[in-house]
Length: 131
Image (cartoon, rainbow, N blue to C red; front, side, top):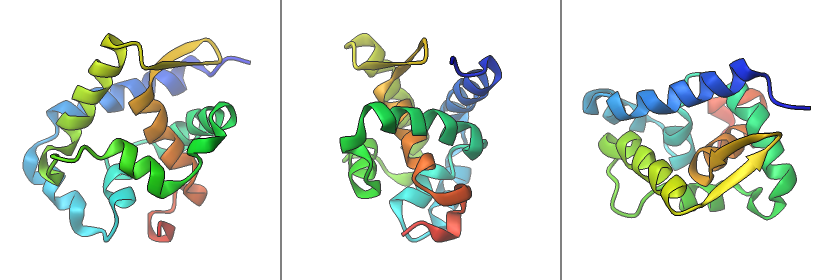
């Protein structure tokens, strides 16, 4: 069963917005104590992302770990203020270098699939439950 088009389009639109996120807004995202909170704060539609993330984890169960996903997503040299731009760069590089995954007919960059997987690992998208 394919993902509803609106779910994927909302997610892709949200990821495109990350590039335009002002540094001041991105810095404000760091108020949480964890990398997972900071990463998930970049997604305006956690429920939509979690739908895709669950499918990614179904086909890639060895990545079903918050700490591992954070390590894979958070660029070593990225400051929180530039995190959105760094993730967008990783996403483009994934496509350029063939690091993609096919989920129900959609082709996604590993970076965006992993960010969705992180959303799926957070019950009900509850930011205060992320450890």
